[in-house]
Length: 321
Image 1 (cartoon, rainbow, N blue to C red):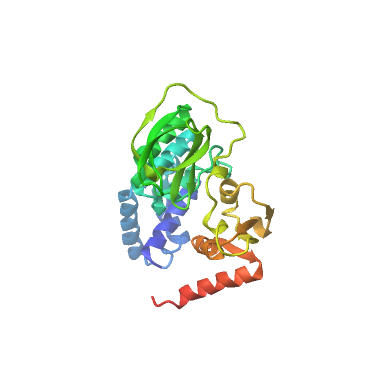
Image 2 (cartoon, rainbow, N blue to C red):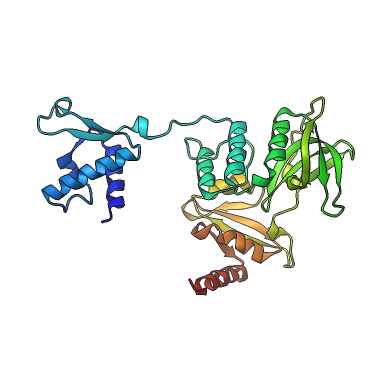
């Protein structure tokens, strides 16, 4: 057994123990120690204790007299010092934390994983509040995105310079922000255009210069859905005949679907899975997206779509390492 496995076993045992464990109990019950001679165990255990403490793990030694045991000291890991306290973040605070972390780390996997954990409440359900789609790389868009988010929270109109894809030249826009939406790696600001007197969406990456706040406040319509005013997902626009594809998300991802794919028809699958009907006009785009989830997501129907997913996976496996 590798040392890292033995250390993990030791940490788990000392966290779960109801009372401090003596060295003899550790040797007899924890995998990785039980096959060692007395002297080999003594040396290994001393090294492992030093390793845990050097990593900041609160390994406590409890004297034998406090254990009412004259034979040996005991060891335990303090749960109160090992686990982080539960953070009671408000939805707005959580969303702001996401933007800050992604702006600094550029959507790194470690940041996404940590932020995903923070968005789960103690019951294992997604935390209430604004829907957030993972994976937005906002490093280049940070200044204006932060200003838009702050204005959105305060219901303050904004003015900014915006460069359209066609014209290229920047023009001044005045907007009441109604929402921020992420689509295909980019953020979009949606709101009431004060000059056009209509709801418009703006790609945040095309905003140049500072964002200015305007006087007054406004009210966001209670039934307003910003996502409806931004172009659909990549798989919704394409050359294929639009058809419903049934995608199964396993139980570990079902809450994610409910949070990030609202409104799509869904039904319960086996073992807590969730089967979602996704309208697809570009099957290859959907497959590329699904592959990123690994074994947690699969296509169930139609059979032709499932076969194409298998073909894509096979082509990856056939590529030289």
